[in-house]
Length: 115
Image 1 (cartoon, rainbow, N blue to C red):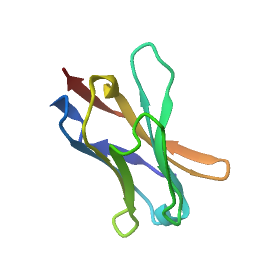
Image 2: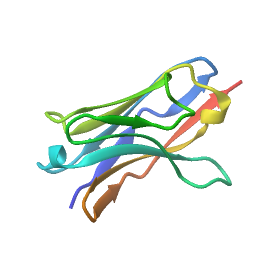
Image 3: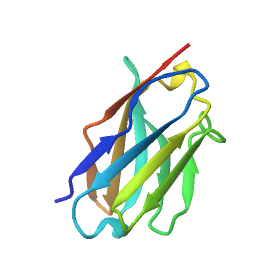
């Protein structure tokens, strides 16, 4: 069983930056792909960015050039650096680890961007 704990959310003005962290328990973190998702009020959860075991990344068009996903396997942690934040980035952000049919979700962290 893997447990995920997100941190780093908060309130920021438009144009500002935040860095989200997702710390995973267990010793098999490097075996999992990882990703960040977000869910705004009244909307479906959507993929923001993901990173493979080998470090290949993928981004939603809406965040390309502004967000960067990375991972530190020695620290069992995946990060999401968010720059040039916009009000439309306001959402609860969740991290996810997956391997084949196994998947684990964090509890979410609120990001609010004021205009």
